[in-house]
Length: 242
Image 1 (spheres, one colour):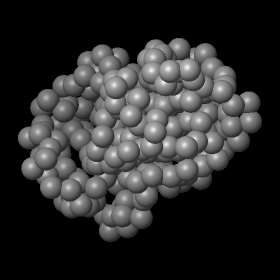
Image 2 (tube, one colour):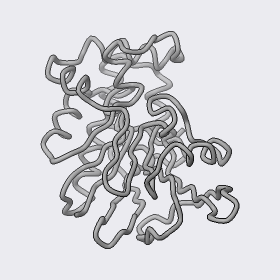
Image 3 (cartoon, rainbow, N blue to C red):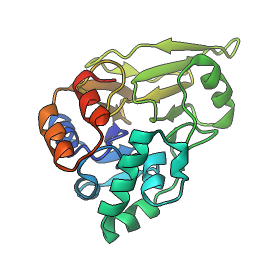
């Protein structure tokens, strides 16, 4: 089975469609959460995801759009976008987002939006947080999103310490005996100073993982965001990947 693994679409339909077109044949999508939030096309992104066989997790912005989180915990721009998304969501999109689990285990993989310890909110952004989280899942591998940054975190078998491995785009890596936490990065709002949409391909038969990046028409998404009056900073950041 060949899986398109992605996260943090954030209602960016142009980026999402570009990723789907670039991925080549796949059997299903594994989405690690935050289908909506920030971007201009929440219902369209839900609809595109549902066209394919998929697994999808709930992210914090998905919960925010459903009113399941206190918006005061978000910064002003995220709060404004979440409020707008709440108004725009169709009944069908609400039903879909409301059905999503926060944590899943599929074979050798644990899937979470933030972390296996705190699936909705926790950011695994350094080796200390990663170290703790290795004790919160039993499978060899854990896939997460939320930070919007592609990375591989490897647990040392001898001392349990973690190492950060930078992604090697377009080069499949073999998933061996080492326990890993892997983030495919963000489709719709990258934050690693690279504005290209990020995603990954998991070949579950060959047991390989491949990080990928692809340019998309950022200005089209920005134009749609301006039409809807979404915050300036959210529009501008797409151009720079921060």
